[in-house]
Length: 248
Ligand code: PEP
Image (tube, rainbow, N blue to C red; front, top):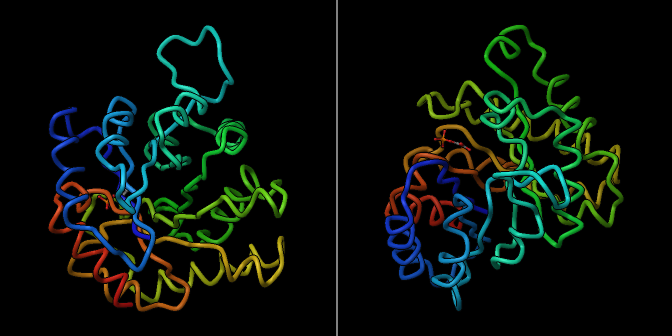
């Protein structure tokens, strides 16, 4: 899978233009392609993507089912736009909006209950990497928010390992650092759900992945694709990353 995460960058007209360009360029990908857009884009972009293999993700959803939560957008609302995925646990949501493992557990449950698949992000900050605690950090994030799921529910989970020190910084994990962590994550999934499920779990890498380094990152056995921020905002770059995944 190659998934884009547009974040707070495009207004509605710009978003529709980018989605249209992607639709025109991504006809027959050999991998799943998903674009994550702001809430306000979802319904319009879903319309643009009709007949396209590109799937659509929200970048968040509420931790409540429905009701008096001014400004929030529920998982059911997201699903009603035609989106198939929801990105949850992104480090920016954890850091700036104080989303705890418990809150994320609620969001994951609501997303799945409403028929959305979840791209669940995990990853350590720079100090944790420097202290050598990255494995424990990632394990705690999984334990806290998704490892309570049943094997049946797990089929709708995609993991994205995003070392926080690499997001939007131009610093990329080396292919070895990425592979080491992805192999570790897969071993945790195997402990929990068995070897076969672990083998079938999609584990994406995210963090300054771009059209230049994607092929090398994707050549690792346990790196199943990428979650792409900055480079997903330019159609040519995003398409080149999809191409890199197709050729991996
Ligand atoms: C992201 O935000 O998920 C991300 C990986 O961003 P970037 O590619 O810009 O580092």
